[in-house]
Length: 323
Image (tube, rainbow, N blue to C red):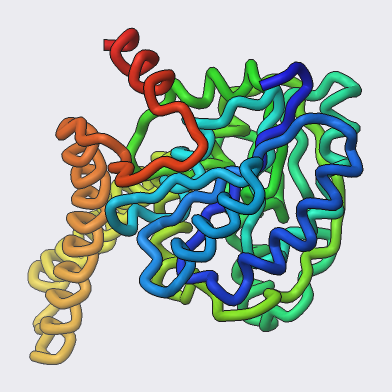
C-alpha cells in the first residue's frame, strides 16, 4: 500500500444485521482523512449470512477485504489474524458492532501523526450496559493494573491504533491464550489515550456473555500475573498455621486438663475446609499447566479457509523466514 496508509481490522461473528451499517458509517470517515486505507473483515466462523454479505461488500468496494476462518477461533485470534495480514503504516482495531464509533478514528490517527506508536481509546462513558457489567469491568481493569507489572490502561478495550513498528513487534508474540490489549501495553513504545463515549450496540446481541467474560478475565490475569499461584501458596501457609495452632491446643488440653474436644460437626468442617483449599490450589495450578500444555503443542493460532483481496504469499514467506 501507499505511504501513510491505514488498515482497519474488524472481527465479525454473526453480525449480518450490522455489516451494511458498518460500511455506511466507516467509509466516509476513512475517505475524509484523505489517505489510502483498507478494511480487513475477519469472519470468525459466523453461522448466519455474515460471510455472504462480506463477500458482496468486497466485490462492490475492493478496499474491504475478507479473511474467512475455517471455524470459530475467538475474538482475540481474529484480531491477531487481521494484524498478520494488514498492510498499512498504521493499524486500527475496531469492534464491528459500532459500539466503538468510527468517527473517533481520525483522532487516533492525529495522535499517531504526533509521534505516538500506540493510541488507545479510553471509555469515558458506556451507554446501554448494565450496572453489573460496568461495575465488574471497572473492578477487573483496576485489579489487573494492581497485580501486574505491566501498565495496562484502565477503561480501555481493543479499540486502538498501532504504528507499523509496534505492530511488527506484536506479531512476534504468538502465545495461544491472547489478551491483546495487555500485549500491546507490554511491548512498550510511546503510548497515549483518546477519550470517547462508547455507544450502544447497533443491532444483534453481545458475543461476550458472562461465561466468556470470566474466561477472558482469567486469560488476562494468568497471562500477566503469577498472583493466583502466590495466593495458593499463601492460603496453604495460612491453613497450615491454623492447623498447627489447633494441634497445639489439643495437646495442651490433653496434658493440663481433663477436658476433651468432641464433635463430629467441627471435625467434618475442618476436613472439608482443608479439602476445599487443596482443590482450589490444585485448580489454580492446573490452569497454568493447561496453558503450558497449549503452548508446547505449537499449533497454529488459526486456519484460514479463504482470503479475498489479501496477499497470502507475503504472510507465508514471513512465517517460513521465522522458522
